[in-house]
Length: 156
Image 1 (cartoon, one colour):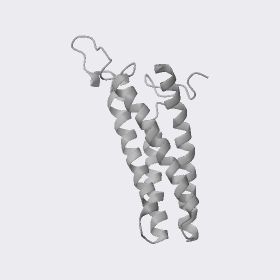
Image 2 (cartoon, rainbow, N blue to C red; image 1 turned 30 degrees about the vertical axis):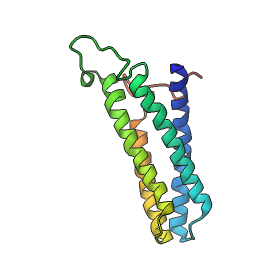
Image 3 (spheres, rainbow, N blue to C red; image 1 turned 180 degrees about the horizontal axis):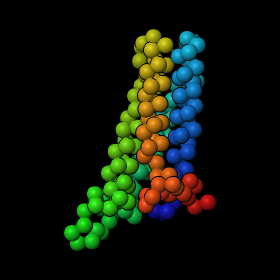
Image 4 (cartoon, rainbow, N blue to C red; image 1 turned 135 degrees about the horizontal axis):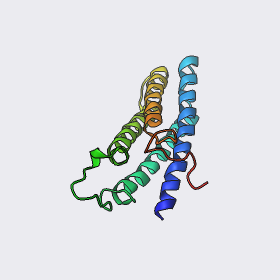
């Protein structure tokens, strides 16, 4: 089950990245063209937020109960999490970066429900989504990162 959750978490990363890029494109087009806010844009932003939250729930489960989870992990006597780059990344850096990015995605979707001018709605959502994308790209354990790197498509 643990391996399946890690694979699902990794596959959902691609879903979020694709939806986030689509959300950024839609927000940019809406901002530049000055068109009225569309229900299709709201739905795209909603699906982006849902994918991010589902991935967050799977990640929180792994963070607590996974192979290297806080509850299930047994550190050697006298060892601390910040000492090792691997554990520091997966126990501190990755969760914090991803939670911040999901907050930004949620704020971006929240703009769809605000009663503000459509140009302001698109502009603010665009900035939230771009910041979230940058954070996600920084927080992903890409294969080229030493010690913490994972394959692009685990299990395939």
